Length: 274
Ligand SMILES: N[C@@H](CCC[C@H](N)C(=O)O)C(=O)O
Image (spheres, rainbow, N blue to C red):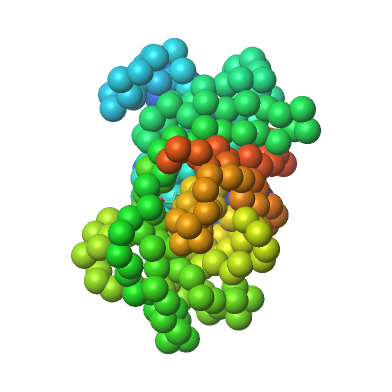
């Protein structure tokens, strides 16, 4: 029987199982990830955050003394980056005494992410470069509604669809995009509604998960695509998601994401036999 210590946390209700694996010995399989993230059979989460020392991660060529965020989607797939996850990861490091704040650097597959805990408790993360693509893809939701969507790279792939009120969207099944070759490894799909000046609301259908209550990289994609579309100069965007609100600062092609991060449970889980 494998018994693992875990924590559970969320950032604007994008929720994660957190596993401390300092010396890289746990090796969760795809099935393990799916089971841990299963809301009925396991603990439940949109993804898994494995906390491992960066020196054990061959693809990391930076400071080996940092903590590496090994992020996995609920279906077991690996993603480059998770904007809400990195805040929860920082909260975990601080609460467990694995780092000292208020500034904490996190190693990720999308590079080094510097984070700071703000006086109000929210966490601000340097997300790095955000690139709004040219052209559009056509995204069709379950009820047959079709939207033009702008590709955006936030380290992981996104497509941001405009021209919809988010309340009535049908995300009960996965939307499809055309041409399919635009995103051979899948894509996170955001749907945006303008709320006010530099203020938008969105819903998201995440690659490897399904509809989630929030997606941090998605909020950055939405802010960048909205800014490009409006022809605005750099500035700070408020992004409302079903699970709360975040702020995205855009400057010179780079983004900072600020939002809450909380841990809600700690325990021990007995995994089914492999
Ligand atoms: N929820 C995350 C994004 C997680 C990864 C994504 N599903 C992908 O496969 O790229 C966020 O907060 O950014």
